[in-house]
Amino acid sequence: MVVHTKTLKDYINYYDFYATPDGQECLPKTYYYTKYGALGGAIFSIYEMALISKPQTLHSTLARFGRFTFPFAGMGFAFGASLCLLGQIRKKDDFVNHLIGGAIAGSVWGMKFRKVSTGHAIAVVTGLTAGYYKYFKENNLPTFTSRTDAITEFDPRLDFTIKLYDDPGRPNEA
Image 1 (cartoon, helix red, strand yellow):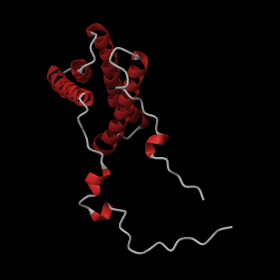
Image 2 (cartoon, one colour):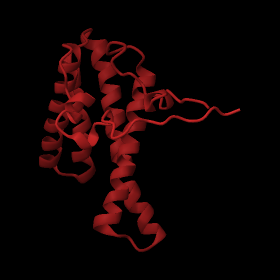
Image 3 (cartoon, one colour):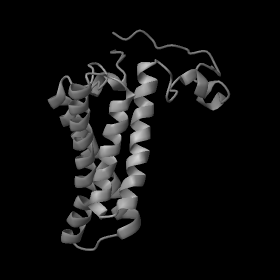
């Protein structure tokens, strides 16, 4: 009998954006930001089509899919490229690069819809979010807790260490 001890992180290879400072490894960072942006845009497009617009033809479905997927990919590209440029120009690896990069990425959304107010709002939100995350990452502060003990501490339904009966075991298999 084989016991599988791998976790989900062993099967999914993700890119560690914070392993190198801003301005280094620009091409892989920009590629992965664009890739993850396109993936997020595709997921957003699918939900938007299923719940809101409900296109009827293949042409309208593809048009709706591209309506959000390409801007999200463009936002990822703008964020990755601006981080690289800011890291090389400023010669610093701090949250200000991410704040400005997030604002540049958010402005792509405003350009897509041709509304300055929308662009400013999204730029402020994405800039502050990216700056916040980088600040917390560089100071080793927890951003989102993923501790299982914090989740299962007060919910006995999620505590799988409780045994209702002793395990009788398996007979020896030859």
